[in-house]
Image 1 (spheres, one colour):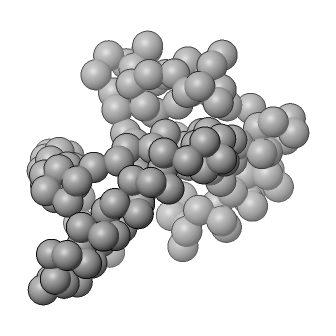
Image 2 (image 1 turned 180 degrees about the horizontal axis):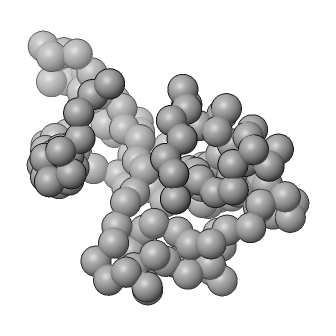
Length: 144
């Protein structure tokens, strides 16, 4: 494979759909409707478990043991935000993620809620930073 750098997922996905490139690692959210419409063929998911949204699509880890790469999204607040505000935001986010309509909406594009308390989220970010930092150092990746 030859890496083709793009300035974002949208132009890469456009070229994939147009046949200018043959494959890409796309987020589930950006590609699932094209998969469902038969415009894209999924080869594998990068999570350790198969996706409930695409249960027949294998994981890369089924072929390459230990492989895992997830995309995730979180909400943060500026340093110094009062604890009561952070707590209120966290409660409201938890409530939203527990709402059956929100769960259904997220599941529709392959999303899996991962509600966390602020300290848990901070730890998660640290672990992700360390994991991908090791990959960057091992591969001698440099910013262009």
